[in-house]
Amino acid sequence: MALWDRLKEAAQQMQGQLEQRKGELKGAGFRDASMAMCALVAAADGSVDPAERQRVSQLITSNSTLQNFPPQDLEQRFNGYVDQLTRDFAFGKVNVLQEVAKAKKKPVEARAVIQIGIVIGGADGHFDSDERAMVREACYALDLPPHEFDV
Image 1 (tube, one colour):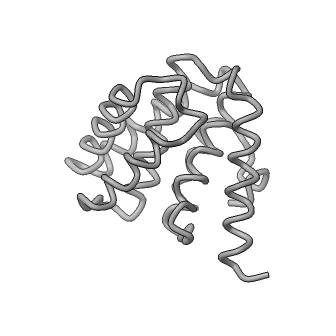
Image 2 (cartoon, rainbow, N blue to C red):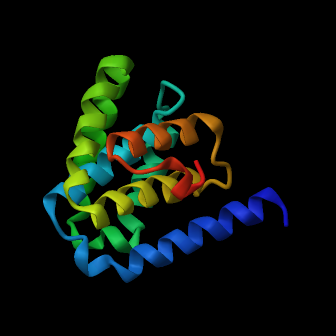
């Protein structure tokens, strides 16, 4: 099986797992942590161009698991986190990872945040090393073992 096919299959499997837990993923902490995770994945290489920002924003608002929240609210939060990362990547990364870490109190939400990051990162068919490293850092922030997610 080609790498693209394995990545696509893994992302679909994670999206299916998220769908099964959709009813449990309605809290503000999950909303904020998942938007922070999306921003981290989008900015994993240290920058976010407008096309990438728009693409990730569209993925967020079309993701069925995130439809528990108003799309404009998700976009606003995502863009706010991206802005922090683009102003000063190192400082912004610390702040945004702290937002992700708030989900660790609820293991179901913590795992879902990581899964959202992987789904967003793999949506273009290429989950690159920078994106994997960022998801790995988020795993550490959430006290989750990265190998559980193959990152």
